[in-house]
Length: 156
Ligand SMILES: [Zn+2]
Image 1: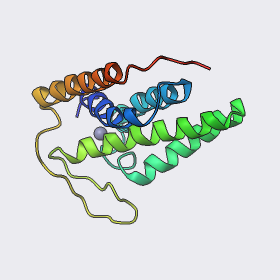
Image 2: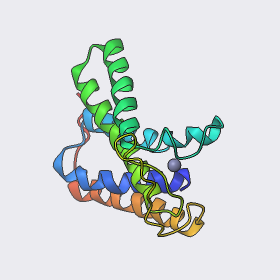
Image 3: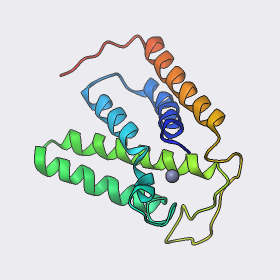
């Protein structure tokens, strides 16, 4: 999928979590890194690595989220930042993998535990209609949840 499709799917997933927390600095951290990391696995395309290989599995999601949030924690000494940057980056990368699993091209999301290549093959990752639909659906879902929650941004 394209970046817009991945961002849309991540917003859609995050919108389901929104009802469980108020909009605070912590949840904004989670949302921010969720969106940023939702496009990260496709760096393999940019740097000429085999596509949907090393960066497209749940082990990578755990690994990169841990490294990233731990580095932030070491720099900030803020345990809240550790937790919410970890959750955000993990949800972002996981959402990317789920999005790509819907498409035609098979890959190994459970590598190295299970080496079977799978995908649901519902649509091509280049399908512009699906990508735009997911993007708009994610935006709509996310912002309508925000409005419904009637939350006040309480930055502490
Ligand atoms: Zn991808």
